[in-house]
Image (tube, rainbow, N blue to C red; front, side, top):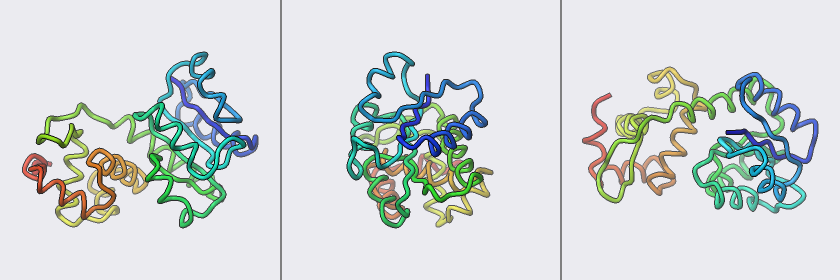
Length: 204
């Protein structure tokens, strides 16, 4: 398994790789300058377990890179980073399939926190548990989140309760929303009530 860092700007790519090497020293990290080199790189270096993707590449427009990667690797998490403010592009990237959005103006500490949160969330994925029909399967962590949302807990409350960062909470919630096919806490709770998920998530 490998982590793929795709960015045509060497300095930013080096910064991402440096953080990843601190967080996952044993991981194989593959650096690419363009998205069209991904297929051949995967054949050479192995299946991806994380993508760190620059939003603006020479061969992408808008969220096209995120969409293209998600179509080929739907189950692999994507961290998108961009010079564009989060207010401008974050929502579109998340809807396209990204797991988190990082502004290039972020400090090294912020970058580390976001990537650590994403890697922890990926490592924290537990064996899925059976749920109501048409709801797929949720991990134990996702059933915990549903119960916490039902209690009206904020991201900070959830982070404190689970002893994880707020960044990690966001990643978990984004994955939960995508699993349920919803875009908000309200929609997630509505779906959970309609499919009997709250009763199965009651035990923490």
